[in-house]
Length: 142
Image (tube, rainbow, N blue to C red; front, side):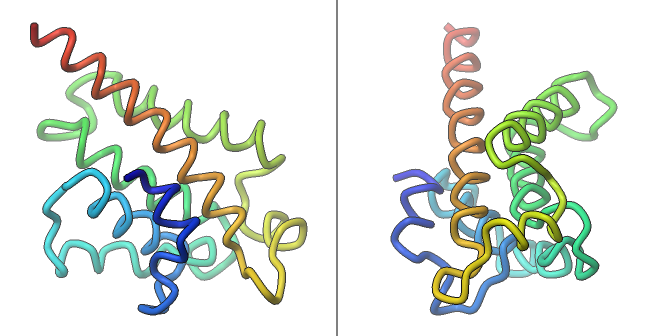
């Protein structure tokens, strides 16, 4: 099961998770990250573009998941997390036309679905990156 599969099924709605929480909690479940409830709370302040309709919370939640999965100790250990984050943002922007919460809400948020389509788009991009990187890591370990 992928993060996108979870979002399609309405994951996080019952818990009233915001966009960043849906992605990070979904990644925790889909990828078996074993993040604690305390750690998952770190995503809370990133919803709604950090509460000021800035960078999309679904993207910041995705960056948290990528960081947990592909950083050993710190961001400056090499270029990998920077490159993955750049790819996440550029691919999402190509797909959705923006990375900022306010215009994304204007263009995609509905009364019925909320920001589900935005969150789903971020989840699909995240899943594609994770799948490729895990495959690459497995191949290099052989």
